Image (tube, rainbow, N blue to C red):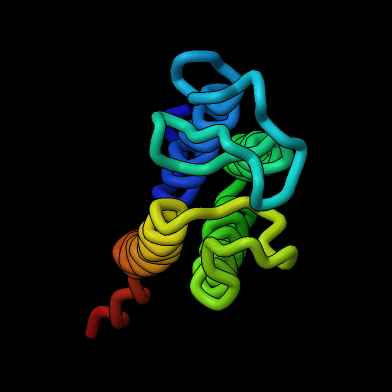
Length: 155
């Protein structure tokens, strides 16, 4: 556990956080109007913490992202892949939310409101930033721990 790279640690942190969000999305009181939650679609009245619009599908996606983060944090290469691709997906979700909006458009199947859009942007920046920092950190560590060149022969 102490030999984890920065990428592994960050992927694990994001994974555990998203698992928590997925679970919280199914807890009454933390999620409002849980009795009326919809499987998918923009008409789900349920909101996590009374702020972020959620559906059963939305919560399942959080759980899957969380499971992926925990599972892929086992190796540095997989952790970096998780951070990069999750960041790209969150950018896409942000753009999708901005384009589709929070109206009654049937294309808004997630569901997502304005708060979700801001959160998706923050997650995109956070996860991609984590990928970039861990990538840069590993490169610096690699340079520092590289085998030094052999000493020149003595005269």
